[in-house]
Image (tube, rainbow over all chains, first blue to last red; front, side, top):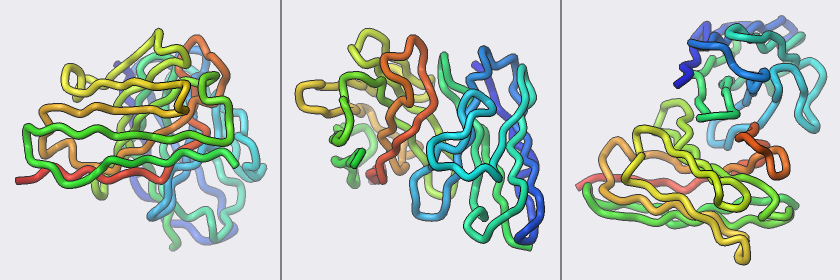
Length: 107
Length: 123
């Protein structure tokens, strides 16, 4: 079973700043089966990134994903007010699992 | 419009059973694997179970294995989760989610989610 650890737990930033979120896997994630989701209060999660670096349909290009093996990163180049939310990484392909989440809050 | 609508949640006593349903519309249901994901109040996401497009492949989280059963009826565009021997720790919002790729050989990312149905296990 692959365990995903996200850091930091909370990221306090201002609109316009760059956000860098980390996701580390306990073992290599095969074929980059790594996704990122955004969740706002009272809403279902929304798929942002799949295959470690491919943006889902309709996702702005300020969101980008990178990494391979055990280390993955979600970068939001310039935070917009609507980007303040909780972000989860997920590995899929075999037995899906989510990381514990990173909350991006307004500083 | 692609849509998933969950139902069947509620308050149930420990040890009892509950069956969740998810009605799909706006896409060819029998082309995609489907999943249940839960979220305890104030907590993160936990994958519960997944079923392939033809029910040939099924998986469960260790926390529910032997107690929960996933199934689907492609003729009715519906996904189900039979939950038996419920425990307090099963209390959560249960989401239905769709695999992103058609007839994928492995589970894929989840591109469409419902709004969830709340299950509360308490005496």
